[in-house]
Length: 305
Picture 1 (cartoon, rainbow, N blue to C red):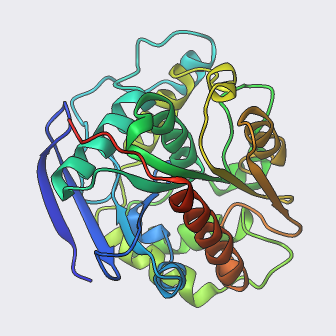
Picture 2 (picture 1 turned 180 degrees about the vertical axis):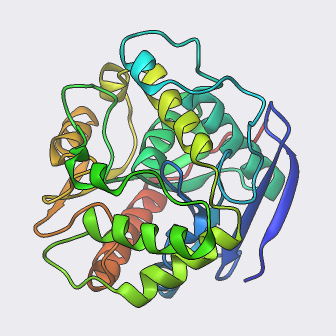
C-alpha cells in the first residue's frame, strides 16, 4: 500500500504518515513501533502474515521518527539527567505519544483497535490502554517492559562499541545492519539482505534524526513505572518476549504479563530484539487468536471523541 498522510493529528496537531494493509472491513490491528524506529521496521512479511489471518493492519511513524512530525525545537535530550530524576530536557511523555495515536484513530474513523506495540512502542501501547481504554480491544506488548527500572534493563555492551551512526548514506546503512545483527536473535538466521534493504529505506525516509530517538528515550524515562496501573487493566492481553533480548531483558516481559490480569506470556528461546522471519507465522497466529477471542467477548463501544 502507498504511504498516506494525516495532518492536525491529536492535541499537538502533528503530521502522521501511515500505511494500511488488507481489507478495511476486517478487525483493525494498529502496530506501534519502538524508539527511533520507523513504521517500516514492522517487516512487510509480518504485516502480510497478519493480513492472511484476516486482519486489517495499520502501521505508522511515531512523532520524531520517519516522515511524521519531528520536535526539533525541543531541548537537547539528556538521558543521564533523566535517569537521575532531572526531567528538564524532556519534550513530551508517553502520554503525548499515546494521544498522537488516538488522534490517528480519529483521523481514520476507527472507534477502537487491537494494539500491537514493540519495545518503546509496547510502552506507548500500554499507556494507550491505560489512558484510553475504550479505544482498545486487545493489547499485545512485544519485547517491552513496565517502566520499572529494575526490570527490562538494556545491555548496552552489545551496541556501545558501534558508536554513533555515521551521517553519510553508506556509512549509516552499514552501521544499522551491524546494530541489528548485534541485538538480533542468536537462535535464528540473520537476514542481512533484508536488514540492508530496511536500513536503506530508513535512511531515504529520513532516518538520521538521532536526537529524535533520544527525545523518545527521555519521554519513556519521565513517564515512570506503570506496574500498579497495569494491575488494574482489564483487557485481553498477550506479551511476547525473546529470552535472548539484549535491549530489553526478558524480565520486562515477564513483569508486564504478571501485572496484567489474565495476560498470556510467550517467551521465545533464541529470540532477541527483533523479528526473525521464522517467527512471523507464530506471532501472527498468536495475535490473530487474541483478536478473535477479544472480539468474541465484545469490542469497546464508546465513540471517538
